[in-house]
Image 1 (tube, rainbow, N blue to C red):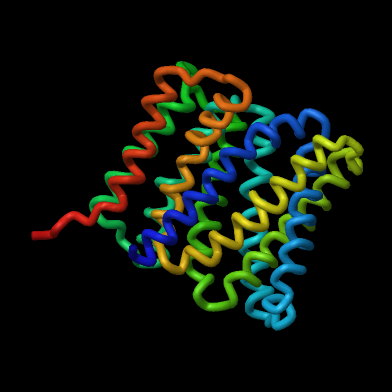
Image 2: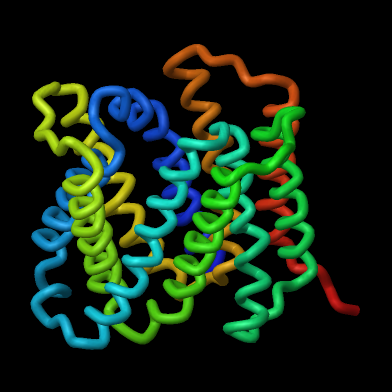
Length: 285
């Protein structure tokens, strides 16, 4: 098994974790403000990551702190614009526009990193974006200010993947991830204190949701991404992440008995097919 395939499988595991936590995150956000939740989630992840990977953190240098801070700001921008966008647009359109980052990543990779995606990857991207459309879009395709904010979010998430791919091999990848997580937690706290009534939750269910999303879906996920992206391309990473709504739908079916529509099933098949096709190496002869 090649290093790239191992990296892609590790990133697929991250996507499965994100998909599985969608239900508990959605439930938690009914009782706690968004940035409040993100603050506790990312600060918990930062503390846990720092303790587990103390040897990586104790040798921090200025370059790692600087790059981690920049990437963390970009990652937070993705969360922030997505959250604001949801105030003015539907969850379905938000999901599709956010997933549009899978198209932006190969474009930016070609322009900024001089990495031209191969034929199989291009086909995979096209299948994935078509699948996202089937899964998320309805008949209302009109655009509003919320869609514009969400498009900025898609650009931010695309740049996050690009920046991680560019810099993770230049510094300690684990330390780079921990700094990112800390920056998102700090910025979330600033936004929460300035726009929300910040609370310390008392519900055990919310703390369980925070623990799972903080430790597994944040600390574990972003450390895996930063470690594995040195062995795969940013475009492959973005393509794999398009499967998040597929796994969200699967876990919603298992946990909440939510039935997938025919369109959603077709969209899921297209996304997963796109991921498989992207792993195929077509002969040039």
